[in-house]
Length: 354
Image (cartoon, rainbow, N blue to C red; front, top):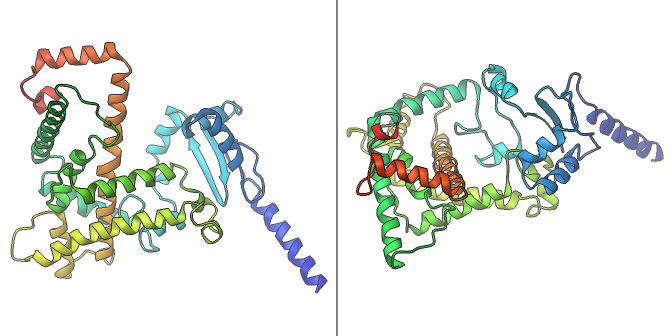
């Protein structure tokens, strides 16, 4: 019995030692400790700087030999971060970096498999991306039709803001976080599902609040449970796993209901109304190019597009306005140029925005 226990202890320490060894030519970075890796170094730097990007920059200053990349180990995961323009450019133009990670975090969101287009790679990603981009263009994506959709949403945005200001007798305090989310989402969702949401849609507002919670609990390094998978069993809520699952279940339900409505009204003899119709037509006629096409994949694609439409562009606009408000001289110059070129009685045209 003691012999067995001793063997287990020796094997455990051997595994911890081997797991803690840095691979040959691994980029410089904080010291690794058993099980946690360099997680505490990142956490301490982040507590001091407030942001992950600044934390990495602070750590990089301790390693002047870094040559543009810093290496970490967070739980079970090894990670390399590019920290200057040269290394970023090299990574962006090197096909060796086209892959996407695998693991619990990336599979839990889509029923235990990697699905969609944001977190897939190789032939699966190539087929799906090619199909989606080709057919989205039929509904205006990256073409004149999309410009018209954007102009229409901009008109709705202006109208809603004017009504808000009128209700406040010429003044209004606007919560900029999420102020553009519905309008940005509509530009993409009209092509995806043929649906335009109003800013007061309760289901959409709830879903976007869930998305905000989701992106509050994760960052570009992932989530706690993704680096320490066993935490989902011993501390599902503390690790963020339970919230992650619950939020994605709500999103699956919301998007699944739209797919179901499309299936009920879909007529293969009619012209496709949107990308959902095109995808359903491909599935119904069994003429999919490969087995990468399925109803689950359609849901995952819609989920990816919904997140992209709700978060990325919206956050860019949010921060743009934040910087403008914090720099009044810049804000005045922008307003003067708009007044001179466009005036205050209409929206700018696409040509004027170039």
